[in-house]
Amino acid sequence: MRAATTSFAATAVAICLMVSCASKPTARPAVKPSLSPEQIQARLAEADAMAARGCYLCLKDAADAYAALADFVREPSTLYQKSLENDLMIALREFELRLPDSGARDRAQGLRQRVKANDDLLFAALELLTAPAGDGLTFGRDFQQQQAVRQQVLLQLESQWAANPVAAYFYLALGRGSIYFRDFKFDPQRVADSHPEHAALRYALLNYFAQPIVTGVFDQMLAVEPRFAELHLWRGQRALLGGNLAIARREFLAARELLLPSLIVTSGLAPVEFAYSHYVAALSLYEEILARMPDPQAQLGKAEALSYLLRHQEAVRELDDLLKDPSRRPGDKYYWRAWNK
Image 1: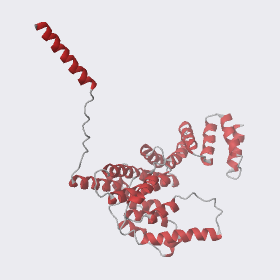
Image 2: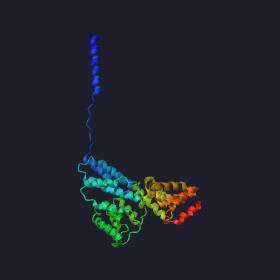
Image 3: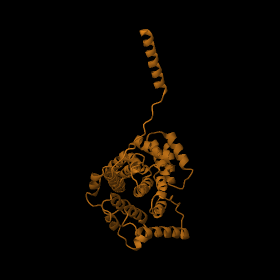
Image 4: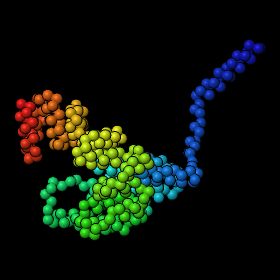
C-alpha cells in the first residue's frame, strides 16, 4: 500500500512538473518609467543650457536630451519646437564644417508638423545658407534675384532675432557680406548682446564678421565649454593666414581631436603638415579628403607629397589626371610632373 501511494505521489509530481514546464509564464506588463514635473523641468533646463553652449558637440548632446524627454512630456509642442530649432543649428554647422550628415535636417522636417509655431522662415534661411556654391558666372538679373530673396528673408528675421536666439544666429549667418547690412551700417554686436547666454552668437561674430578679438575671449569660452572645436578651427585659420604655422598646427590638431570627420579641419591641417615636411601625415590627410569628395587642391597636395616621398610614378598619375583640366594652376601641375619625370 505504501509503495502504491509513493508511486501515485511521484506520478502526480511529475505531471505537475510537465504542466508547469509546458505553460508559459504570464508576461508582466512593462512598467513605463515616469518623471515628476520637477524632474522634467530640470532635464529640459539642462538640455537648453547645453544647446546654449553653442558648440557642435553641445548641440548634438542637446538633441539627444530633447529626444529622451519626448516620452515624458504630456504637451510636447514646446519641446518639439526646441528640438526642431536645435536640429536646424546642427544642420547649418554640419554644412559649414563639412561634417557627415547626421540627419538633423530630416529630423527638423519631421518635427515641422508637430509644432504650433511657423518655422518656414528658419527653413528658408537654412536653404539659402546651404545652397551649393555657384560657378562664379552668375551676373545681372540672376544675381539681383538672389540678393532680393536674401534681403527679404533678412527683413523677416529682423523682427524675430530679439526674441529667438536661433533666429538671431541665422540672421547673422545670412547677413554676412550682404548689401543690406552694409547699407544700414548694422552692428552685429547688438544682436549677439541680446542673448548673452548663447555662446553660439559670440562665435558667429568671429566666424561671420571677424570682429576684433578681445583678449582672453577664447580662453573664457573654452573654459565654459572645452569641446568648442570651432574656436580652435577659427584660431588655426587666422594663425595660418598670419603665417604662424606653430599656432595653426596646434589649433588644427585640437580641433581635429574633437571633430575628426570635419573636412574643413582636415583641409586646414594638411598643408600645415606638408609645410613641416611631415609628408606621410600630409599624404594621409589629402587622401582622407579625396576619399570623401573630389578636390583639385587636395589632389595637387597629394601629388606634391608623393613627390617628396619619391613615389614618382604615383605622383605623375595624379598630375596627369589633374591636367585633364589645365585651367587651374597649370604651372604647378606641369612643374611637378616635370620634376617627377
